[in-house]
Image (cartoon, rainbow, N blue to C red; front, top):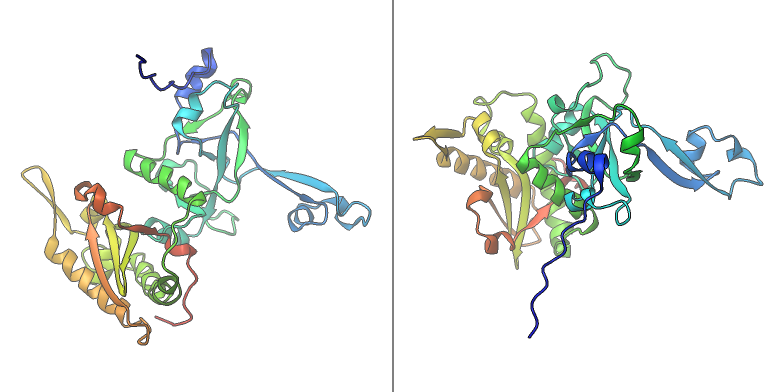
Amino acid sequence: MTSARRPRRPEPAAGRLDVLLRSIRQGDIISLGAVAIVGTHASQVMSAAGDPLSTDPSSRADVASVTIESASGWYAVLSQDCDIVRTVDLEPCLQVAPVMYVTDEEWTRLDAGQTSYRQFALPPDRVEPLPPADSALEHGRKPVVDIRYITTVDKTALLTVPDVKRRTPLGPRHRARFGLWVGSRFARIPFEDRVVEDVLPAIRPVLDSLVGQLAKTTPGQRKPAVSFIGCVSEWYVRTMERNVELMGRMDLARARQEKLLRTEKGEPVLDETGLKAGARALRKALVAKLPRDTGYALAVTYHDFADLRAAEYETYSLWVVQDDPESSRAP
């Protein structure tokens, strides 16, 4: 007779390092890190960095590296919580990605559900200090995590580098989304070819246009489709033959800002009439841009994920809008 073994718990690092690591979670930002890029002396990054050997014919093919500090001074922790606390013998490093700055328009698109496999929007008021409004940063001043540049940081450096700072910019729900986002970077879900080629590129410019109106209007005075989009944190798609469903994930905090959520007897209640009107208006605008010869039907729906059954959730695929090619058709 044999007994089942219990799963091994992560063995924590020892002493003061253990305390430091247990204070860090996935999605936190720390002031320790850099961006290291490997190339050759002839590669574009090395030349841009002023590599003196980039013009030397005898050295151009040699391997070289350049290390760049993020303009923000912050680096987001990508490692999972269990790997953060493991001993340095098993997990010697933290994986981090730089916090970089983008324009207000780019940040608004990321925050309004037009997610990207490459960048994740952080709350500006939780990433301090932000650069001043008159700063010379050419790409803007709203913070995002840029996962295109992943670097490993020696855990033991936390003991030797003085004044390492840590911030926790994400609440529980956003932290969960961040973890899924990190995983989706390396495990993207494919859609049916014709949906990718004919449907999603055709409707994306409409979403782009409506998201752009969020920054130009105020809650309570927006058109129904714009208010509806303002409540969405992510977009999901599911298909059945020629029927395509675009589902918006409701964010209750955003719905409240859009005046589409109220509190009754201490419980949040969505304004179903307003949301359905917004979904109808959005569908009308999207359908008008679908190619007529493809035969696809489009539905626009919404869900608060707290009420969505797991079995039904698994029938949807996350649509990472910003990574799809834009349609040549103007909205």
